[in-house]
Length: 477
Image 1 (cartoon, rainbow, N blue to C red):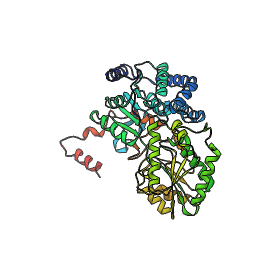
Image 2: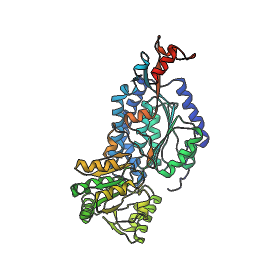
Image 3: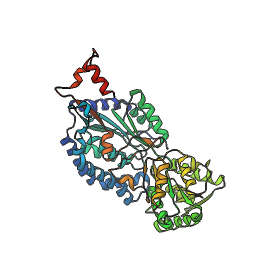
Image 4: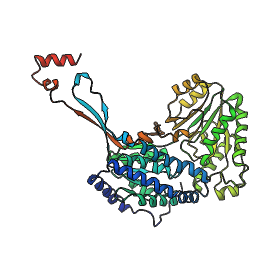
């Protein structure tokens, strides 16, 4: 990451705790009821819709260039759909949920009551700077909480846009935004939130969790990892290449659930490489103008990706630039072309680290069990992309690989299904957001047991003889 240059917009460290205390005091004084939550989300939707052109301009300026249509799909569509889904289902999610007590405890009753936890902290990343900030905010507001947001310093224009948007919708005692670099982020994570969500790298996720630990703050981590695409021998190769190209080169690969590497059966390996080459030509041409292709966010990320390619070449790997770009122009525009690394060894950087860019390692396998074993032997990924039309093959894959989420015969689209929980497992994260899962994450699911006026439980106390002895022995059968 590039070093963050302090700006007048940065939040002074001395303001973080007073702002948190203001949010907490306001929440304790008046917790948002269901009508307030719905009104807040409706105002957020209206204000967001008005400001989409400003959002698009801010994101494009932060990236140097990102296609408007990618901004509309990944930021506007996803965020608005999350708001709509939440408004449609919020009344049902917020109702007390009946729980069975079992006939031995009749006539008592029980329920699970979703209640807000208090003040939720959200630390959002730069790669999708709007939806990864606002989607969890929608869930936290829906659950009845106040929110303190820390957006990324690497997209400063978009972060300022978020601050202006939220100030237009919420009073400062319900939603606040902190701007700044790593020092602000570290102090922010150490605040005594009632729940803290972090989206970003595994390395930073460890630091966030450590900062939250002294307060015993519950943490949800949305991280990443090496999401594999596994193309089974039965699946049409051209279609697999098209959909993997979408999952790899959308936002120039700067996607936590983007395809990180592809496994293809040996017999069709060369044909798959040719199919990817054809896809890049069809989508982006020779990148002479590159209007439909995103740029890398900053110079440090560009240099990191260059280092991955240099490491692969030094190890003797075949590196294929699918749309070569002159090096001077590439660095000037941070235009990193779609690039393949063929059959890299496990020791290569592209196989050791999450790539988070437009480099795609392509590996061949001899048997499907070999490919499944390769994935299963590694850290559990945030996303798994199996391509097969044969149910037994799919079941073999799903029964051997644990992943944060699975998208069968396509890529990325599971993120847009708001009824599906989104979250990682192990090194790719913990906890889940989106839809009801997000609402529940930012709620305390409060168990409530209500005893009846007359109950045999009144007999369950010393002295343990007579009917009390017989009743306890009967219950323990």
